[in-house]
Image (cartoon, rainbow, N blue to C red; front, side):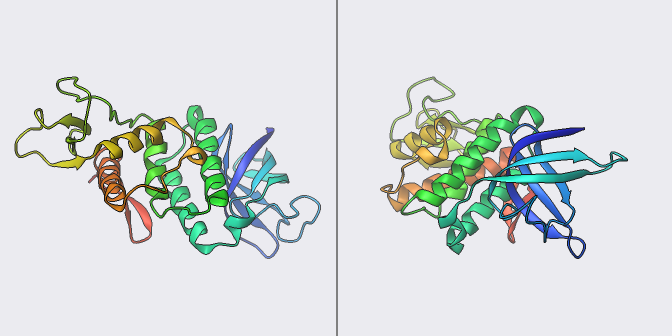
Length: 248
């Protein structure tokens, strides 16, 4: 089996003197790991390609026994120079990538997740002020694409439009108006600006987000709501530099 696919280089490691393993998020095949034999010295087959977050075209084939994949050749399609030169932006990109890896990418979702991840890299590379909240917002966008969508427009109990005085019910995973909020429930308050930003996050790709002017109080609300949703309903939480399963 051999195929050519577009991919984003997620990680690269050495396993012998001149050989590398490469993890890629691809458009048609999800996340794959392939071996680039001679990858650390080959100027013809991999020149300038095998760095994290590069966008490449990859020719991939199966080994003779079918037990692993060979990365036979790559062509560099795009390189995010500003991102490569800024450790803060690289840290945010790494956090986003770790979430995608932890959540997993089903074959039917591979193109959508690939395009959203590429859009996130464009945002981190081009934005004048990449807000620290970006990885948290990206988690919701990816989770929403895989079925964990939040509806910030209407109360899920009475159907009334949600206004300024709304609440996110953590264990239920939806928003209600004040009148429908159950007494004693674990809930988080949501302003109208928070609800509007949540709607935009789930509708648009990251490179079209523009929340630089959001007040710090709104960003804190967003962070609490998204983190609780991801922890309780997706089952992942960021702990000690990695995503771990929050379900027992």
